[in-house]
Amino acid sequence: MSVVKRGAFIVFEGCDRSGKTTQSRLLAELLKSKGIATVSMNFPERSSSIGQVINSYLTNSKDLPDEVIHLMFSANRWEHMNQIKQQLLKGTTLIVDRYSYSGVAYSAAKGLDFDWCYAPEKGLLKPDAVFYLKTSVDSLTNRGQYGEERYEKVEFQSRVAQVFDRICYREASYWHQFDASQSAEDLHSRITSIAEDLLQKVEAQPLDTLS
Image (cartoon, rainbow, N blue to C red; front, top):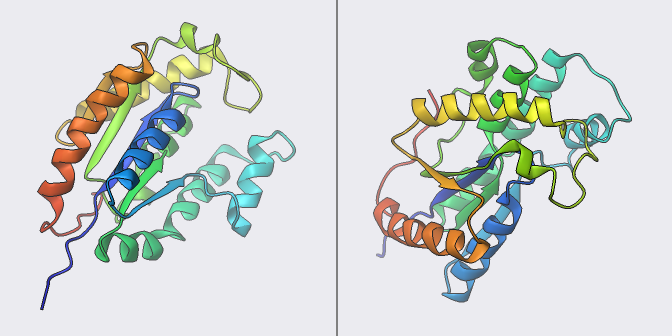
């Protein structure tokens, strides 16, 4: 009987417009082209009832206290945990645009306590790798459609970046930091080499959780 080798759980993080969506798409396309079962996701996942409330908040049509929206973002991840686990265990690699770390970074940047922000994430599945696209906040404003959603303000994004740096230092064992100002092709090449090594490495490893 053949043992099913599990898929890799890969997350992209960084400030708004840092290139996460492009790089996660390029990686997913490459893996699929090699016959590797791959599913892309992004958080917040806006189709669920919780996700729809979050979407209303992000597009400025609904106001909620900071603590409430933080817990809703976390609940949005929890409601998809079983589905994520099942996909990984059946051998599918998941590429996720934003995860718990964005939740912590954006809420802590608003002034909420870092440890309080991290608490509801404990127990969620831990990624095998986080690709952190780090860029100077000033350069972000040059990218398309900047400023349309609630969080895209330069001063705020610089605070978000500081929290991401803190998390990157704390979670250094599986975080990979990249200079997002390099060309998309160079970035894709560097990310791909790490991802392909990772896929083989995690096949027989058990899933872990955030602690």
